[in-house]
Length: 249
Ligand code: 13P
Image (cartoon, rainbow, N blue to C red; front, side, top):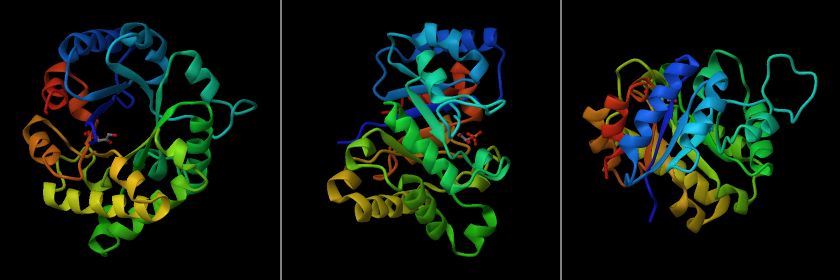
């Protein structure tokens, strides 16, 4: 039985003080909650938020990380630095990284393998652009991003991977995939995982939905057989909007 995993991606929002205040509100609101939880503040707030969530039921996430362990990479943040701050999960391959900052499947795969080799959990994001969906290529895009993102990942390491299906056209736009459409892609991604790793790994794989998820649509999305949680942007920025999603059974 898969446990729903509800994660907040705070993107490039909040000063350290604002991040700490939200993290404290969430620690109270989600205490004893029925799901697995993670919040991913900006790098600048990780240290402070780490102290707030340590020992609670909320995991600390980072939004990205370098392809390299350390070295001359101005402006990048390494896996060692994240671990040093208590980070437990890293979001990789987010569509904003793929499409605004030109990250390739190969770069994302290197990051996935590096994070896993250091014991982190990974949320691997996949999802199609609007023009790809309209051209009937949604499944092909998700398959390619899943296969290339996971290339070389062992079955054992796969247990620390969550996949987030985030249709790019639904991110921050207010447009949500219908529960039926999202579930169909989730089922397809699960089939791809099954082809790569076998039926048990496919059945165990947690696949989150992301893209304008909010309290009003969360219940219907989470009720679907193949939707195992959410990766939430806008609605994760306030306890009042995140907690109702996070507390959905
Ligand atoms: P929104 O919930 O703001 O659409 O963002 C989704 C997302 O990109 C989470 O990673």
